[in-house]
Length: 610
Image (cartoon, rainbow, N blue to C red; front, side, top):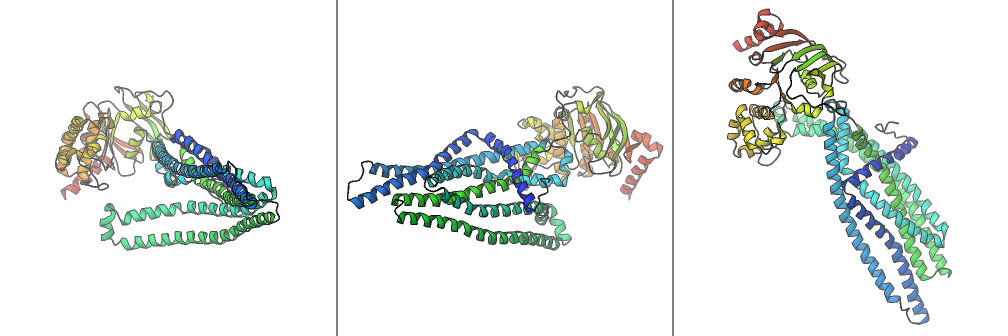
């Protein structure tokens, strides 16, 4: 059975639960990596704490028997009597101190584990393909993995408690076994049904949580839509608040009813099964009293066995419950382990080549075809063209013709379905991907707006220059972002966005100037501008492109724009239709041909004249 498709059939559910225990060792390795010294200290403390209950019962037995003998025979107390009292006090004090130390160790390990695991999740997520992020199923898996970075802390601590409980149970059980093996067997048999029941309902809880994940993601999205700056205007203008709230309420009510139904069944079954455990404990306790009244056990032995039975019964239940909890929580770890098992398909080969410095021949698309995973439609169809050093090339075409897809392939966010993309005659897949990206500066239309300082927003273009304020300001001046920053009360240190206190939001055009400044700061050999002036007004656009020659001087530039006033500045223009090049040439030549390019240009020009 697929681990991602939980089965509610009892027998298959148990097999799934047992198989899920295979998830525990990988997580324990992560725990060990997060803090080996803390792990060793924590388990040493637990082992010592686990031995204290039997030791205290043994000392108590000797003390009580000595007192009974003293009362019955009116003799003197043994010389070692007060030493035993002091020892019992010392054991009690040690138990208290060990408990405190274990809590401290657990808290320390929890922080280290959360930090280490969260860091690993971030690092692994950043290594995955763009195609992975465009898969809704992956988002469910990623969301569960993120939650498990903190929610599975209980399982980590349960493993430690389980070790302590097992040692305590074994020592107490050994004490009971010395007097009556059958007594120990009765205790175990009476606990097993409760363990089976708890484990069964815990598995049903996992199955329900798994099934509810898409609905919970929908609820999160509706919550965001109902209370976010981006959606506030349309919520009010289009009257969306009421229907969105109604949908949120209906989905929430459905989840609530499912959870209550399972909780009610668990309550009834758990109550009945726990009664059997209680019967077993008090039956064993009554037998010990009977044996004492018959003179076969001393009062000290009665006290010892009563404590051992209570402790063993309690710890046997705890051991079964803990093991069941670990097994059932291990089911949730399936998503975390599966997340780390996802591997990128776009990666650097061992011994990959560094990107050429300088690029001498440029890029070549050779019969490149591409379709998005699961898309079923070719976006590019045997496309071939060159981009030479120092050349400014523009891509033109209606939406959906593959312009942005070419950028994604050029920057190796994807690899071609067919054909090759060459750089200086070498397939892009032969180069080190990170080093290749360092030679590219890309500004997408949907560029990021970082909730960071103005300086840091620009520094994202080349993070190694984050402390170089001179370079950051120079890039801002070239992109006209310096004027934007000059209006901010905090200047380059001003926090942008509304996520944090003191943050200031900018207009779309102002944000875009900061994004263009990243391209100046990057100083790459290839500059890709995907609708770089989409959010700028006409005056700002004109000012930016007055500096366009400076930005692209000595570099290859790939320009995508729907504004032909921008496109005409390129030395060569490619017109895309149906994933192929229908026309190619400079602006004047294409206008003279009166083909598709001229038609699109005239349509846009006419809209401006109206």
